[in-house]
Image (cartoon, rainbow over all chains, first blue to last red):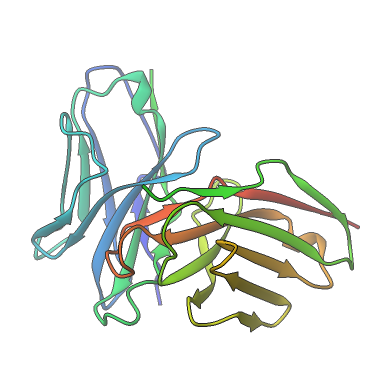
Length: 116
Length: 114
């Protein structure tokens, strides 16, 4: 059973470029969450998605950031016009559909974004 | 808003001893609380979940307690081993218990010396 797959593992961008981070949830999981971890800080919730729906994006900056989870394919976190402050580790997590089980989230290895 | 506090100082203990990590939350008592392990360069790995009506939960050498009066959870690793060295994160759901939006503490780094 493959776990949550994130790619790329490392991504280097120059200021002003776009960053696209991909996440394939565990098989059978229909909920996807994105978190950001800045150096020396804890994980911060960004967005919660189900297939084709954004459930909660309260943790995501209003500008430059967007997320989607299409009917087919991985979830994408997109950062436009990156700035140095976007440098961080971005983690994706997934959980099953069943309500009782969806409290537990399974994390990918993360994408480390470096903005030069 | 809900906040989680974990001891930011690293915990250094000798192999074979019991490690005890603390997680305090500041606001309403959550429906459940979780503990995760994170190794350098990796994503968090779920360890244990304890519900508000449970006082204690065990899994092999791990034990978690939940005291809603003190607004505190304790995480114990008995007979600790160097392989237990990692950062341990406490997490709870921001809302009434099922929003999916987890709030994490900063984590406590445990170093077990042989």
